[in-house]
Amino acid sequence: MIKNYLEQLRIQRWDDHRYYHHSRINQSLHFVSALSFLFAYVWLFVDPVVSALVGWLVSMTSRQAGHFFFEPHTYDHINQATHEHKEEIKVGYNLQRKVVLMAIWAASPLVLVVDPTLFGLFTPWASATDFMRQVAKIWLVVGGGGLLFRTVHLFFIRDVETGLVWMTKILTDPFHDLMLYRGAPLALMRGELMDPGLHLNPEHTLGLIGEPVLEEQHA
Image (tube, one colour):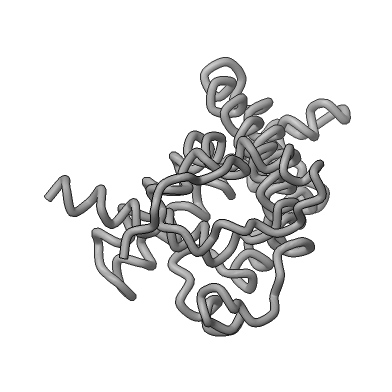
């Protein structure tokens, strides 16, 4: 069971990389996102409010900017798939779902403007600092809610294992992306806008993005 779980995790990670991370700019932004997410993870035990602010304002914005503005939305010749097909089979949040999630995140501070107590949950904010700390608490709920919602959704439209594997992938992506895309900024500075190694098997690319691959490909 554990072996199958890890295999499904490997497949989800590989599909995510080969389908949605062609751009070196996107990869570099994911590297930045991974670093800031790891800081947010640590700071969650120090000050969850700061963790939420970093996680959303730095980690999520840089991560999603890569997908929205720099990742090609044209025909994927490497995987022989249209953008529409990839969006349809996406396990997690495709661009349409991300628009909804990011819209909820961006609009959530307005709730505190309309009702500073948030239906009696908060003491009314009296300063900009108070406002931002309360917003950050809402963002923590939005982040956790978005993760749990899609996980449970996958329970019904796929199966429980797929949902749990996806949740594990999301929570561990910062560690994985840090290794996977550590070479992307240097490759980008060399003028390489697209990853030339996406046709390789995953064991030849994980942790080696931007570095030469010398092993022979498996059939």
